[in-house]
Length: 77
Image 1 (cartoon, one colour):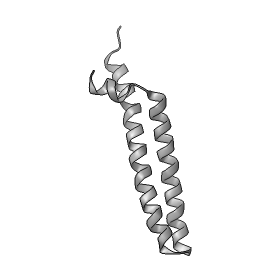
Image 2: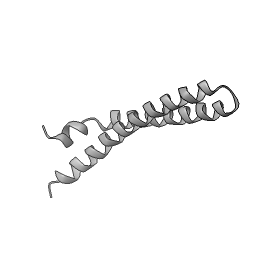
Image 3: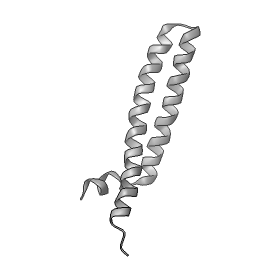
Image 4: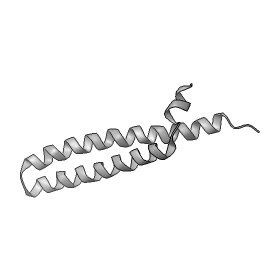
C-alpha cells in the first residue's frame, strides 16, 4: 500500500480531524486573548491547546490532500 493511499484512505475522517483541529486552534486563540485581561495561566493553557489544534489540523489536511493527490495520479482515462 503506497503512502498516498494509506494517508488518504478515509477522507471524511481526515476532514473531521481538520475541522476539530481548526476548532481547537480557535479555542486556543480565545484563551490567549482571555489571558490578556485575566491571569497569564489562560495564555499558557491557550498555547498548549493552540499547538495541539494546529498539529491535529495539519494531520487532517495532509490526509485530505493525500486522498486528492492519489486520485489525480491514479485517474484512468
